[in-house]
Image (cartoon, rainbow, N blue to C red):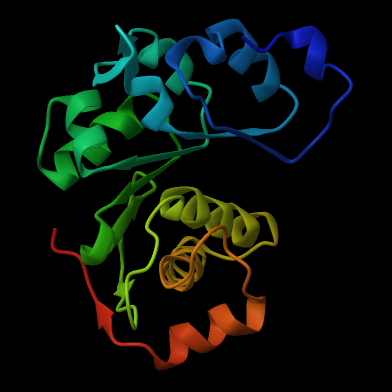
Length: 198
C-alpha cells in the first residue's frame, strides 16, 4: 500500500493511480492527493481479487468514497458493469458521474470509447489497426494519451481521439508505445474509424 508520507513532497497536475489490487491506494490517500492535483484512475486493479493464486473480478468496496475525489476514471465494458450494475453505456456513465467522477472514460476496444462529463457523451472512434500484435497495455496507453492531451489544454474530444490513435499504434507493435506525437496525429487523419454506439 502506498502512503501519504511517500508522496507528500511529490507535486503534479495529475496523479494517475494504476492499482494492481484494490488496497494499493486507501480512500485517505486518494483524498489527500486530490488536494494537490487531479486524480486519474484506471479501475482495472480496483476490481481484482486474488484467491489461491487466481484472479477474480469483484466490485470495489470503497468506490463511492474514492470516486468523489476523482477527476478522470477509465473503465472497459466489463468493468463499468461490475462498478455500476449497468451494461448500458449511458446509464453506467451517468452513475459514475453521479458518484463524483468529473470525466468518465468508457472503452470498448475495437468498438471505440465514450467520454462523459455530465453534459455531453463524446463518441470517440476506434482506429482500425493494420494488424493486432500485442494488446497488452492498450488501456494504459489510452489513458496516458488522454491525460497527456488534457494536461496540455486539449478538449475532451480531441484528447479522446489522440488516446484512441495512440492505443491503435501500440496494438500494432510488441511492448510499450514507442511512437511519436506526429505518428498519432497522422493516424487520426488517415486511419479508418469505427464510432461506438450509444
